Amino acid sequence: MKYMAPPPGEYERGLFAHTDKPVSTIICDDHVSGLEIEVNDGQWIKLSLSPSSFCFVVGDPLKSNGRLKAVNHRVMMSGDKDRFSLAAFAIPVEGTVIKAPKELIDEQHPQLYKDFDFMDFFLFAFSDPAKHIDSGEQLQAYASLSPPVSH
Ligand SMILES: O=C(O)CCC(=O)C(=O)O
Ligand SMILES: [Fe+2]
Image (cartoon, rainbow, N blue to C red; front, top):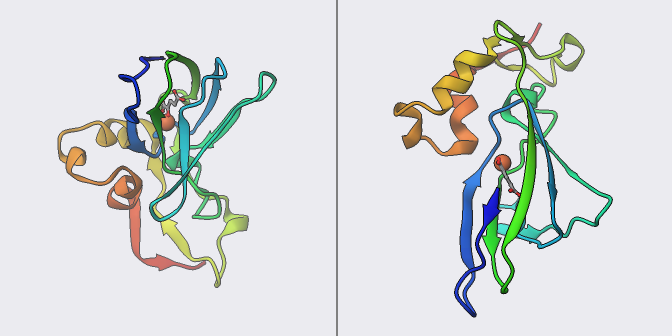
């Protein structure tokens, strides 16, 4: 992706806040920082990736019954340099069903989401109805079991 440097002195959105819809994403950049993650509600931290590092982002389907966090992230641009990034998305083969590992489901951790077809969720997340749902709530909207089920 290419993110243009903002006008001088501005702090400008390059990519809106979201959680990722693929299973996971690996992000590298050209060391012009811009990627930010939300650590607490409304508190954002800018990541500075060193030349030899990358960022591994857990996507909604990898939340593993809520044990892993699909972090909310965005790109904000400042300074006078354009930013280039490369994102490698893990998209499973057609027909892949996402299930929480049974080892992660017990009395203390009831099953939060039904088993779901990855591609059905992916298409839902980019559908018109889902545009009205906060990105971080889309998996909940699509696959939540209420009440959660313990086995
Ligand atoms: O370009 C970046 O650093 C982030 C890209 C990203 O979050 C995405 O494509 O989902
Ligand atoms: Fe992302």
